[in-house]
Image (cartoon, rainbow, N blue to C red):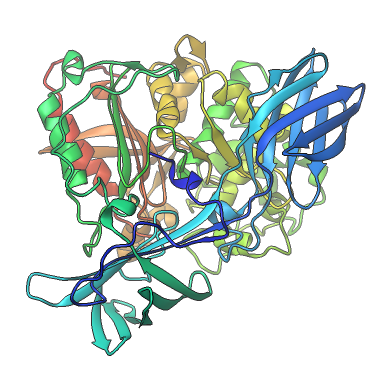
Length: 607
């Protein structure tokens, strides 16, 4: 099965697999897909003569230079950029994909700059070769129109990339000739969309607000809509299978060998496969994996995703800040949670909105969202709000803007979840190490843990962004949880000390109505009354009448890496319910309700 991001290559595709029209011409499954140009693709050939470098991709050439050990080659017409380092005869580098400004979702999601690590191979004296496969930028919209059990016509829009679903998960449909009217009542009011059924061939034309234009959806067969269904229709019931053994470093084993009931695990997978994607509360889980005692025992994918597909991890990738810091401290770099922001970021002086409290912000405060800056992602009008920062494309230096924010609180006393806190922490890590953030991650995490392809999103300045949004394979992300569960070691490679593993996953800040300044429904909608580690969240998993402590990374839409030390257990979920707060059901309903009950032995581990 082809990866979701590698299907479309033209600017606009009408999906193939047209289905015959039913008696009611609107009933059925419809689809639209657009793919935006992302620059050059193909084989990259690099060569150098002293400090002069030359690159060629798909017949397009460009020259670059070397400054110290850093190389940069910018290809014409926004084709892309090579960024690398050359030390002691070894070349490491990234392909930086263009910003996709013609995507109406720019600067959000896939439309940003992305840096992907290259697998550079020697190709002769002073020459290297690598495949360039930039992250695709696609938008797929499905529409299912159907009649429910009582004959009422209903509809659901689904979009696997961004969860653009027309604001409601399900609509009532009325017809007036070829005019279709979609409506849904929400707490915020009624949502309506109007469309037209076109003929010769059958199409549905609708103004789609997220794309800011009229699009035409074409009728497709269920077999051609692989990203609409959890599993292909008419699939046989799921039977447990051992995860595939690949070259990614995971040891695999039958679940029964690690004290887990394979029948119960199979029921968990089947539960996801049985979800109706057009239901009003559709749970769009894209992958689920489980490791016990250091071995992968379950690895399953849904909605057209596969083992080798990268997935948007959203804010779950904030946890990489703690992992990188642990690696730098292990290596003796002069950086710690006590490092003052104003000292490390001194080259940006003078800071805007001077305040004595700003001098007391530490890296630890940033990693626990307690820096005291006017920075709150849950407050629409906060000057440090992530959406507001990213939408202001005229000021692309989010690090500069964050250090210039006014202070609201004394550092260390007030909790306000803010992505720009973690991004500023990333800037501190980059400054302290002298390395570009994607290259720092590659050196300290990705290469030691044997990551496959991944894509690191960048600010408009070209600097790495650590507030969330890294695309990578779920099995690779899961290695972080396993390494930390094992005291900071993955397959013999130490990425953090045992002390840092324990410290970063222990409570450093408490989240409560008192520390957030919000209570009642406002608190419940945004927070839990719980502890917070250094870029790790702390909570419990409910299983039956018991609760088990866990630490985890989570991201919008259902990206969850969960570690339950008591059971020597790591679980990973990716999902597509972006902007819809249902993903903690994965933690309690699947992990707590089905995976933990599958444990049939008495082997537990206390930390």
